[in-house]
Length: 271
Image (cartoon, rainbow, N blue to C red; front, side, top):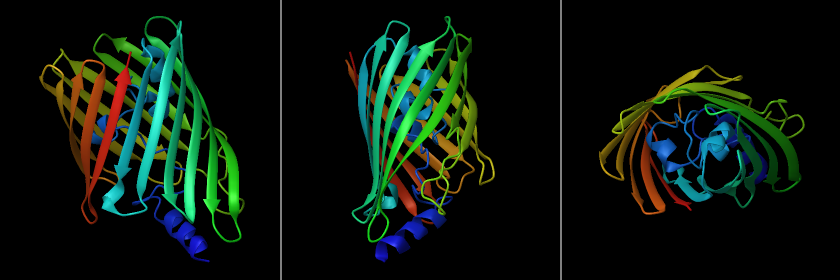
């Protein structure tokens, strides 16, 4: 019975504080430090944020991510991803886990990103969701698709769009539907010093939200980040990233006006 109550609490809180109903929450501490305005980013976490960005990767890469939302036990999220270029196509695998022993969600994703010409890329991903609710519900599996596009308008301007849950699948019969989320945004690079990322996101169940983030290269391989959002989950965020040879460490903190701070950390490796 406790698991059922927990499930409904998570479902009700989806719009505010929780990862309920297999939401498509952006991954990576770089994204978190810029208020998750990441639909036009072309880093390794494009495998979860906009698969079209994988098409711009030229080397194999892998990453892991951890977030402890509001420092509350049971609201931690772990994720991992790997991407391998094969000619003009990049194949990616990603995994995400969130939850408690009596209620948890796992997401397995197989992504393909492909460049069509020098400046345009398309990406698709098929997800398998594994949801466990104790007591009478047990284990439920479901499929969900997503698709993204990305276009390099100019050398310093990239536009991206993404659609999550194309078929509007349900998570469980007679319960919450897996959200259908549309995103559109751009990232503008200012010389080699800074980048501004702007994005609007619309969940069909909710009002649209606006996000904006700034990344500044303080010195070579050291980046400072900040961002703001009109959403109910995080109002503002900040972070730092450092690259050393083939490894990048990103750390970020997001803040909610009532619930406080949430730490994010990710480690990216590339060959």
